[in-house]
Length: 320
Length: 320
Image (tube, rainbow over all chains, first blue to last red; front, side, top):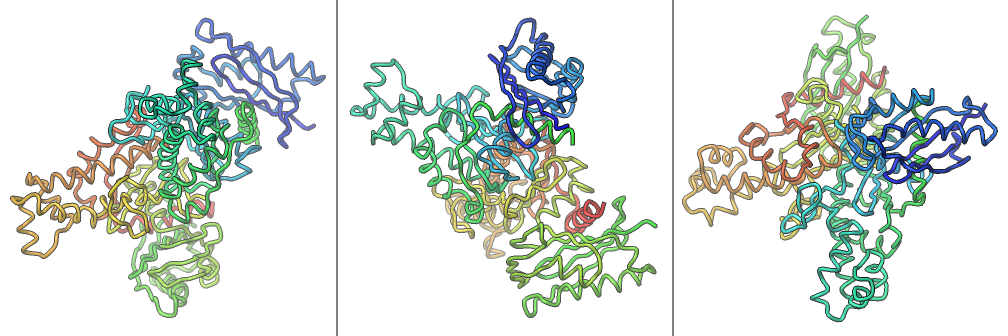
């Protein structure tokens, strides 16, 4: 009997779930709200119930399910599946793997949300099966996942892939939430791009972004890229600054890990070539020629499904 | 019968070889000159002969040998053991693995010299068995090896670990041999440290390094660290500049790979704590707190034996 893999992506608002075949076809995907009550203690029970309902709705029994791969935010011990702390969920010292195995009777493997998204793109997305992959997610913050020899680089305490906290502005950088200054995240996230443009408004008095500011009361990364596409000089300055810092950080990292694919995801990546073209121009200034030759840039293709797909991939590898 | 592993480290002048037990004891180590004649075509034959002589000298037969792990400089396809180009040896498009397997009848696995040194330190040296390791070699240049989940990060075309070519001086850096400017190697290698001090001589007229310069006609990294230990202000400035750039590059890289051990090797590492103390001070400015907590610095302990030991480790893993 062909079995289904279960991929789960736990976020602060919703829990995304999917049944996926071992060949990578999505049989069904759905989501339930994240119940953050009482430190998130009901979450694994509710996941178990939802899986049981969905599998019977599809006319199958629980024996159809091979195993679970689940991604969660926060500090995680990947080996034991223990969550030290996941602020948005409420979990603190929570044995996610043990609890979910008990609720479902299935084997469970846990990784962090950025890593499973990277695995998803590797398996079925822009990574195109590459075994050496760097995923950079440009959203509210900047996240990352590194795949080497087909495996996630997790590091000694699960902190690997913190690409958003590579220092990119050596002197005079913005304060970052992590406590340091000048982190890549401060200038390359959606928030960072909007801030670069906002800070430049006083210098570029003829920028079209003044009208956006008057109308919306704030600038967004999307507004900056729209203005950039139309040739606005403030937007150009902001996008080029962002791409310089991204290119510097990614180019340096590429010299260390020599990826075949560099996948850019997150909201900012919707800018597509408006982002990739200036980024590649900066990247090749810092990557060694052979490293640059080996690395293809691509925009992430799986969007919000990357997590559940990567979770399913983990379940597949784990239950081999 | 307990078998011996063969570790080989090919350099431009000598070829180092060792028989090592699977428990990590060196049975015998020796070296032969590197015969670079005719594009290095006699090297594998000479290695085969030397192995046969040594094994019989030790009163054993060839059946005692389990397999060979060999490190070489240059551009290598690790999967096929094919050397595209090794300048110092003369090899160009040379099938090292196939040729050495033919000469010896043993299975051969090839990796680059920086990587096998990192594996050696991981197995029997300062790495202390850590599965997530960053090795930085400060010699004439700056080399590196990254171990993740117990395996070398090789990258898509064998270029991973090129830590010496992380850009560390963003603007106005020295020209590097690789064609870029401001590479870590230009300010953190033995050559780079000596150059920083030499360039500062005109500013620091009272530095004790003026006497060294008059006496020896040049400054070395060792002379700079000796003067630093004695409180010389030019030497202090040079060492602190080097440590800033090293700390910046290693701190950033640690945020991406989250190593348990950071092993510093090469000639410059003989400075010991004179190097490690200021380096750690800079490192924690750039590494995230949890990343810094997870990472112990150590000076490499195996010296010139790291390569043959790492080669033997590869042979052990390869023939399991």
